[in-house]
Amino acid sequence: MILDGKIIPCDRCKEPTLSVKGQVIDLWYSGKAYARGGNIHALPALYQAAAAKLPTLADPGYEGAGIGILIPVKQPPGGRELDIDTRTRNAIQRSLRCLGERGFALLNQRWRTPQHITASPSRTGEIARAALVLTHFEYGYIT
Image (spheres, rainbow, N blue to C red):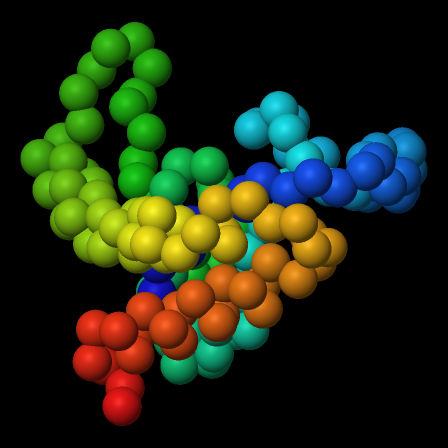
């Protein structure tokens, strides 16, 4: 399983909600992208992978996400190098994670709707699933 995120831009107005810390925030605003957008969540697939004891590969942004989420090991402080085994593990993870990155790029660039959504951002998951089915149909994975 490859875990990665994608924020799909939308033209939604501000919608206040309470954060985990109890502060009022904008529900659809992404501080990372500095824009409003919907996020695609793959939690059901993560639960199935965890139940099957499959590892989930993620980028360093998911540090502390929990058991079963494997992230690359960061460079040690002081400019020291990682040992050869750890560097090899990081390289293998990167080579496998690139498949997930390519999948997001394919969905985002092939179909027009995920590039900018005018519907409610809460519908981004449904739109992404539909784009995935159409992509599989287009490539002949399903008939």
